Structures are given as structure tokens and as C-alpha cells.
Image (tube, rainbow, N blue to C red; front, side, top):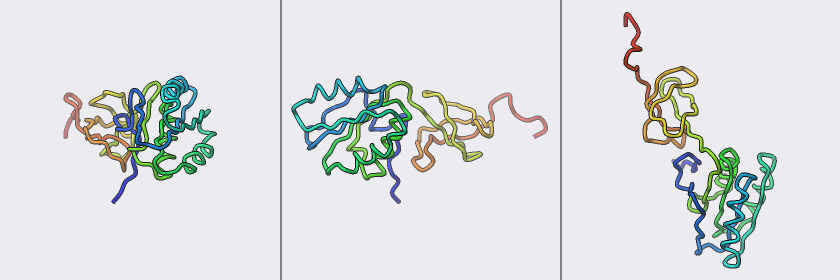
Length: 172
């Protein structure tokens, strides 16, 4: 069974700085207000090497424009996303929906990344601190040990419930 790629805090598409993929025929750079400077710096760096198309967005209201731009590209195009977390996830998801692979996308996240844990007790997803190893489920309040495995299907790291020392119920 094939599962589409998902953008998560340790995704292979997230980079600190864009790297030109010179084997590609064309570059498309999509940025929001937060990523504008990063995108502008990258486009001036690669100017004249390959054709480049840029799109600066204002957020969720530009979904149709982003989708149209992605779908109008030929095979061999490399996509670069410079945006805050929510916009980057939206753009990445539209790209994957249009058929892009992780190899065709590089993403620079401006600002904090988001990290999610999937609770194996109540089967809900909660947001957690970026480097947390233990968290509390927002839904059932279970203590969770955050595993190293990210579930693309559940869109979160697997959270294994445990009873913390000193919180055992009396009479159990």
C-alpha cells in the first residue's frame, strides 16, 4: 500500500538552505511573507542558470493559484517552498496531491516547526514540544512516551501510554 508523503518536523524535504538541483530543467519557488527574503536570496543566487518561476502567496486564500501553478509544470521541475509552518504544509500537500515526490521538493521552514504525537490509548493526535520525549495527551490526559517512529497514516509520532511513577491509582 502506498502512502503519500507528509511534511513533518524531521521530513527529508526540510532543509536549512536551498540547494540548486542542476539536473532539473526548471525551478519553481513558492514563498509566503515570512519566506520572502529566503526565496529572493535563492532566486538571485541561481539567476541565469535555469528558468525560474516565483509565486509569493498570502496564505490559504491562494490555494487555487498554487494548485494551478503546480499542475501547469512539466516533469523535471524542482519545487522550493519557503514559508511558515502552516503555509508550508498546505503548499507541500497540494504538491503531493498533484503528484510530486519528496525528491522534487525542498522546504525551508521560517519560524517554529510543529510536532505531533498519536496517542495509542485514545487514537487522537496532539501537538507536542519539538524535542519532547514524554508528553501528555490533550484528549485523554494519558502520559505518553514519544517513540522514534513517525506514522504517515496517523500523521504523528507514535505515543506509547505509561503510568508515571507516583501516579498509580490506589486500590488497583
